Amino acid sequence: MKLCFSFLFSILSVITLNGQWISLNPHPTANNTYIGSAPSPDRFITVSAQGEAVLTHDGGATWQVLPFPLDGIYRACYFLNENVGWAVGAIGSGQVRIVKSTNGGLNWTQQTNAPDTTKYDVFFINENVGWIVGFYGMILKTTDGGITWTPSTTKPGQSVWGIHIARSLNGTIAMTACASGYVYKSIDGGANWVPEPRLTINTFDDIYMTPNASHAWVVGSSGTTIKWVNPDVVPVELTSFKAALNGNAVLLNWSTASELNNAGFEIERSLSELSSIDVVKKSSNQWKKIGFVQGNGTTLEFKSYQFNDELNDYGTFNYRLKQIDFDGSFTYSNIVEIDNILPQQFSLFQNYPNPFNPETNISFTLPTEGIVNLKIFDVLGNEVAQLINEFKSPGKYTVSYQSGSHSPIASGVYLYRLELNSENKGKQSLIRKMILIK
Image 1 (tube, helix red, strand yellow):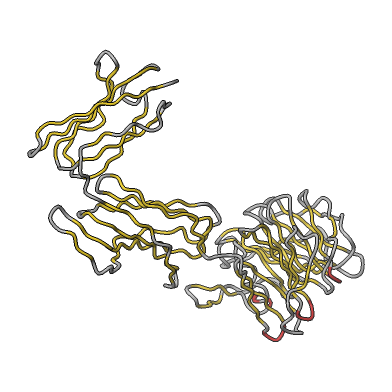
Image 2 (cartoon, helix red, strand yellow):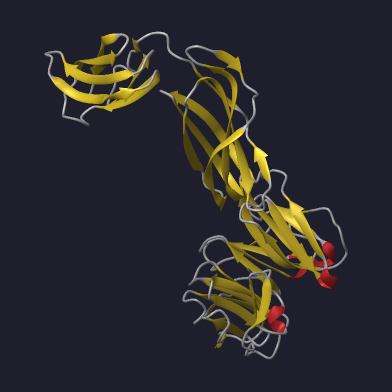
């Protein structure tokens, strides 16, 4: 937001809507107005060369002039949220201006513990940690909300006009827009700065980075604009993609460590080999879209996703994800494979884990369809829980049991019995032991 409004207010108050600029009521400050900050969608604050903050609460329809404690040429302000913000500047030699507001710009207090050098920009990542930049490569960092400031160890060699800090997957990245076409980068919290490749001699005025530090744009004199792309940031970082079979359903699970402009995931399936009771044949291995799961746009937080695919055939199935950006571009994930093979026998497997507390899983296979009943008993034959009592198709199934979910039980040995009642086989049953330890 700061980049878009950097110098527009020195000519005319405007705002963009659906890609177009529209005029607003005239800005009340006659002299130059510099970089502003937007604490909320309808509130915008700029600073002026007349020692004032200019605030709107209604998206620019009306403006309110709020004098700073001291006059001066204020060149930048930054609001961390709707209440807390800072403004910086100077007047003459040795007259530093650093002020802070805790009520959305209505009132300001002076902060003076900083070197006597003109300040050009300010940026905070929380209410304690922030940076101010200025003349002759000055970069100062605070860890106490602006009470004290510490200079960088290795500073840029030119005056710094703009600064932006973002958090990538590999840590915090800071960048500056400097005089004479220089851009400096820091990866150690602003202690040391190294120059990026120089592409122009024009002075840069401001810089903006995306929240995950994947891209940066720098603007300057004579319309100069350059773009930086971080090779370490993947737009959508897929950390896992797994498939598990439960009966005739395939459960797909995947997760991301970060996302950038992620519209969502198309789930695609192909059939490498199809089998049924009577026939086995090769498929054409063509991919088919079977579903869509919405993404989370842009985020650095860990996200998990899930999709359930009900199968009507037996065979070997392949799955992949088609991750789609908001602009329509897409990438494919790796392929996972599932064998949905028709079971040859009626089986009941040992629960896992065993012994258990409080939860365990019970798996079984059905070679034919029928009514399935799965119950748990104590050693005296008293029924403890009924887990399944329904019609099921042939396949492999897993059901979870948590002690006490049906009725309170104590530590000890229990029995679980599986019954299958089918037309061609009649009634069949299997029994196994399991142990609960609390």
